[in-house]
Image (cartoon, rainbow, N blue to C red):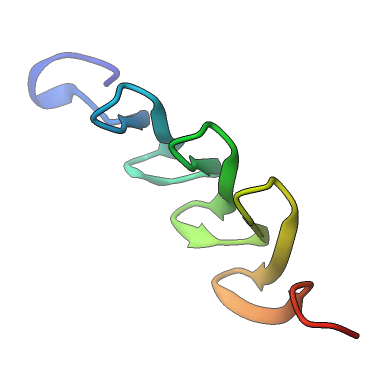
Length: 91
């Protein structure tokens, strides 16, 4: 939180598993998601990476398998999904 009392504004969210390991972390701008949000498996390996711009999904989101490999990309332009790349399917 930034500020005090009624003036306080949420600027970051950091959540942990019951074990204490980091589950996800992300930032806010003017009260909405903004920038990179990263989610983790309890093992510590990345699970998802999302990109936000003023509360709207924008950019490439990555989904990771437990072994750390990217298995899917989802491309967003200002909240609209424009492309999906599924790397888990054989070509």
